[in-house]
Length: 140
Ligand code: CMP
Image: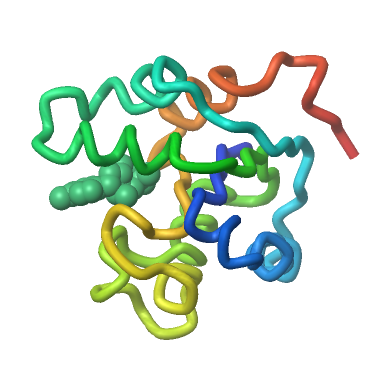
């Protein structure tokens, strides 16, 4: 099915100057970038985005990492976009990520893991709306 998913290029990958290489992987996999912006997350924005992890022991580190520098948030659209993006990303822990995935190639730790991608249709809907107003998402 045609889906939209939220992708975030995290501060570590922005700092490594690999925004273009990561976006190219999405495009080569037939995902269209239908919205994109670079932003500096506030603490409140990061906490709200990751609210489901609030009780996890890594929550504080996750929020400080995600606010440590600019991120690039995008909406990717395509057939089976949610699962396809997760395949391109690889496992959350880069040490477990399959060869050739974004995290295997660009991530250095479970926190600094280069990218985020929505994990289900329900989270994709919430996460896209968290960062983009309807009129900021193009159709093409
Ligand atoms: P992300 O897909 O952005 O969603 C939550 C993030 O928490 C995850 O990627 C990791 O970067 C980070 N994280 C840190 N420790 C863990 C952990 N033990 N399990 C899952 N996610 C973790």
